[in-house]
Amino acid sequence: MSDPIIVIARAQVLAEARATFTAAAHDCIIATRREQGCLAYDMHESLTEPGRFLTIEHWETRADIDRHMAAPHLIAFLNVAGACVSAPPVIEVVEPRSIDRL
Image 1: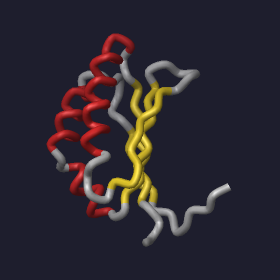
Image 2: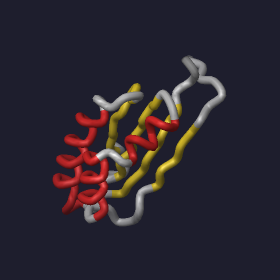
Image 3: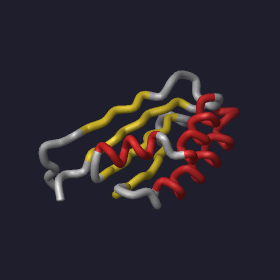
Image 4: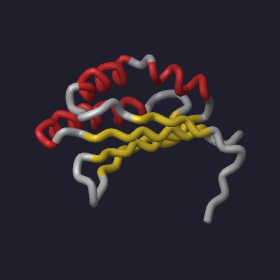
């Protein structure tokens, strides 16, 4: 198996929208983890910057990511999330040549 493709997404969530955002994220995460090619998918909130969320995803192939981007549960989440953030999220796709463990 080749090295996984990593997706990193960052979003700043409005304080008054945090509960709505996290509920929608929870549902999306549960569904995404069942998708073909999903090796890992989780979201974290900063301890030093409340409302700053980071999603880290590991996928087997780019085709798996593309399929995920069209999944109904992700589209539903993005529709909710769009009203909860103070600016558009930053999403990066990282295709490492190798991954070493420390």
